[in-house]
Length: 235
Image (cartoon, rainbow, N blue to C red; front, side):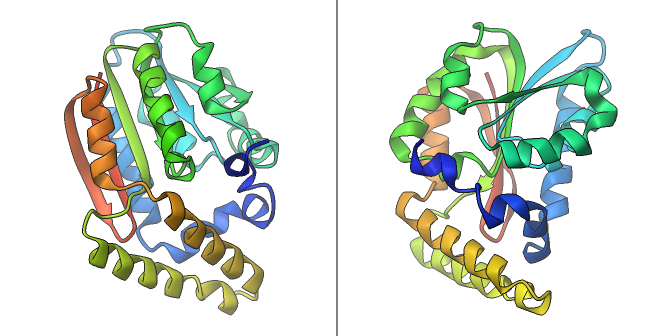
């Protein structure tokens, strides 16, 4: 198993829902995903098939499902610990969600071409090494129908390194909230995680370049606060 696939197998996987405690805009970011889907998926076209890469504990999945009653989610995650939490959280939507425990790239390689109306991910792609990211995007393109939506809410490093380091310092400082909760272990793990991400940081200009290279249109950044942003595009 690769290193990136094990990054949420310990404390962070067990207590992933605590992440929002250190990110003041976390709910706003998640709600923005749902709002965009509501505005960009039709309720007249029958089932709207959305693939979610990196289900985690179901925080984003819930927004996807609530965005449109016709949405059907194919949720992929390689961590059984968080996937089991998501299954419990989303049991009321069991008829509209299908879970797969798998590596996202391997799963996409076996997915039927032009079969999906959208690709949504939150806080996954920045964890993947640059070469993996490069291999991922042609597979995303292959499985999406013409006109399908792409949404990625992620930890994006600003292209200005000085501003990026300022945001990073502020986020690490914000992790001290876990000390106040009596969970210094969570603070330590998130701090380590963010410092590890510096080795493979996902910059805004890399995201834009990948989307342009693989033929996406209407590329926009629709949200930006602190370390995080949401990029959307159309296949």
